[in-house]
Image (cartoon, rainbow, N blue to C red; front, side, top):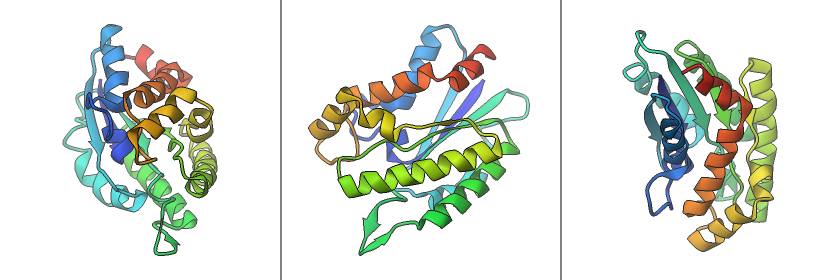
Length: 198
């Protein structure tokens, strides 16, 4: 099975000294369980849903070939909710439109899951991420895409929050935080159903 993980710096695993992030840990655990995966990490640092919408149509087809079973995991949103010069980088309504367009494009190639954006340390930013996550969840439900809420779940996770503090920038965790993220995804029924299909 070929799986592409599409997102931002949190998908890449920025801040992890082992350069695994949650994606690498999740795929390593799946491999140890005997599952044959070819994983593509298509995270790009600082990207918003607008950037992702504009590149996904070029990046996925060469990696998800018709002869192989394929899956796509989406994960983004923290950058959309960031405020610069007094304005959100991407307005809420535009984030939703972008998600709709992304899912529409990806669904033509493979089944889709979405892992919601995780929490950040700044209270105002975190509140906007929570709001965005709620709207993303409803949009995914309307489109029949399983959605894993991360902002509130990891906001109650001491290991994740401590890892954010230790990393220093308030956005990217260290290894322990990414391990917590990977654990949440690994326990998710929608992910487990995919793995049973390998």
